[in-house]
Image 1 (cartoon, rainbow, N blue to C red):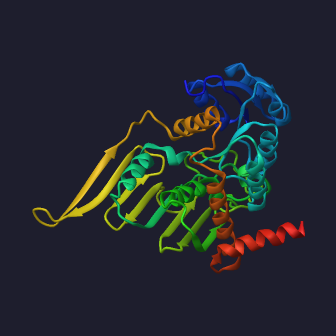
Image 2 (image 1 turned 30 degrees about the horizontal axis):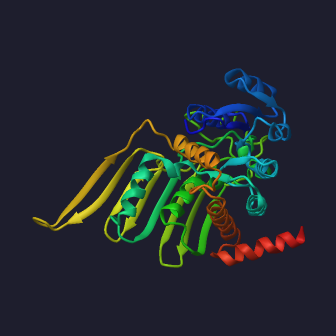
Image 3 (image 1 turned 180 degrees about the vertical axis):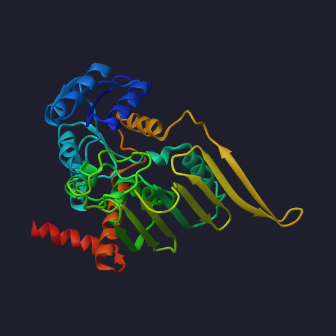
Length: 371
């Protein structure tokens, strides 16, 4: 088994922590430790995995049984946990986004650059069957030059409960963009092989989370109380990204909006196009031909539904840990590009004009001097 002999510690023992723990266990790793502030979460985790548990991450990263750490906490705490784990000599997989602010992400990147261990970032949708098939056909040149991507991650009604960390800007750093929009954005940049980005335009909106009359037919947000709970983040975003070689990305993300839900991902190429749902197992390839007459030549490829993006991602992580080599994907460098674009979208929304990427870098330097 790929994870044999690797001791894994999970920081953040909610749903994502359990998901990763089960995944690495199935890959042969030993889940030896967990950390969470909530006693009930620690007890549940210890009961399921037989792991030693800690109230805070400091004890976990110093545990000699822990070789690798997976971080699934609220965004604000990614930096202190990841940096401490790297400095303790552990390998780290930190869930997306890399951090709640660009400055915090920069500090993680600096720590990773000098650490002995590796650091990966949890963008699991890259590893779903639909994207894996797209990668292979793109590598063979089937699509020609990629020109434009339409990336959607839209819920009709799906705002996390007001008052949770998701709706607290101090803990999350943002709303729908940092929570789900980041998946669509990362996938688009990944599909284009992280091109040089020149300009970003975006508008974020806070429309639904502050009203008592918010309709939530599926009960996504429990105990809705708009007046007493914290809700100071975006619940939708529209953005447009220009790249140096002419590629473009249009991004739509929303926790709530008055349109049908969608995780539609569309790629336009000079020779063919592609369409699939983010995280899905099917890929539609859109082509045309002239043999026997002008015609459309569309095909649907169906991948293995038993293989999830999380499993493939965790396998990549454990493979890198076992080989003691930097990961080939989900790198800190790629995550930093995603984080810079997110920062540029928020800047553009605040100023009402397009943001150039050099403005983002200059702003980080200025804020660092001020602090």
